[in-house]
Length: 217
Length: 390
Image (cartoon, rainbow over all chains, first blue to last red; front, side, top):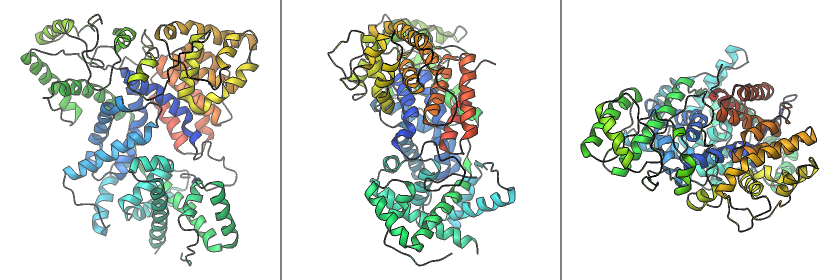
């Protein structure tokens, strides 16, 4: 079934309950800020709750958008430690998720530099494949209700097409479509203006569309 | 599939697809789409792109690993706190299985050798600390900031069985100031919330130090300061929910003038949270919530959610539970989803089996109805994080 894109309307299906709007995370934001405030006061269980809630997200993002899959577990740990260290300066009323993801991606990037990996620039096919293939071992396939053969085929084509994208394109697409971050949140995470997010998304969608079309051949 | 590119819309088509355009831009795009088959086709392609993205596999973090992560983070924070304070130890992050026992031993020895510092074994429960007193004395900053606590803070007892060094250190601890959050410990999942509910920490103190304006101070003290505190706290944190507080409250039971007083100042200045009043406010909230419920029989669900959130914020868990009872589980919409999140948070706080059961029911009902997506994922994640007595 996959993710229902925000612009997509499947006949008969429930519309997404909380579409792209500020209200979407109101409940979560309220609870998060309560947890954060308590964690700032020294409540260990509150920070545990934050870690427990957001660990899967951080793990997904680092696993998918980070450079080195071997580092993934360590990077997730490092992310939360850094979040803890920076928590005193964090306004509990501010959105937590993009802040946390900024830390996560910075950790991943720094780790990439430390390891002196090949710089990720033009997507050379063989390099992409190595990066994509290695990262793939981390993942468990999501169960889909579609016929197994059909979904596997789509997944393979999607994976190949996605791996051919530049890191910037992969990041905006994953954060927008899979993690459902708003444009503003993505702007925070990537450290770019909102307008840049929109143009990157447009270009990334176009690029992925082309790659997908080429997969058919 | 290839088609001529119409470049009139440019990136706005992508923005339209994501629903981020303002009304004027949206109208422009739709106007163009009416007459441009190329762009319509591209819009449809975006949907296909989304489907392809949805088909990508995502790394899955198993529950076991996640719990290890939680525990490991706790211990690392303890060590790092001491390390940063001393400025000399460099905590290295590697596999927790090999690192933690080695480092724990190394830290113990190092500290003994240096003759300073306190060792707080991870097994200690935060519940043993007098949280409210400590916070009242000096706001505890997350970062390492130790030593501001008054010596009157009761020290957590060290783990009974330990090397001689630990006992030596425990003695040292009794003399030295306590380090906030030095020994983060995850109380056993079935333990109910610590005796001093962490919701009690005075928000005003935290606000003045750590945050910027989450709770703003005001000189006005209303007739019922406790209610004002709750209104202020809830409003600043709950955001959209706050606007629903006043009207439903006025419909609610006539017997609860407390509620209407609290609700009446809908817009006004956010009031300071007075620590003592806040701590004392809990029984008042409880009776208020109960009074409201009893008098009205059933709360309007929107009001109930506001009350429940408000109550939860101030630590009145019973009140929160009561109010949640007035919110139906289904249909799956914004309100019930928020209620489910709140129920999960409540169950996580109390560890009570009935709370857990309710929370699970809500989460399950909604995720069964919703299409897959981040909303359902978050609910599932939080539901999975629940650790409840069988």
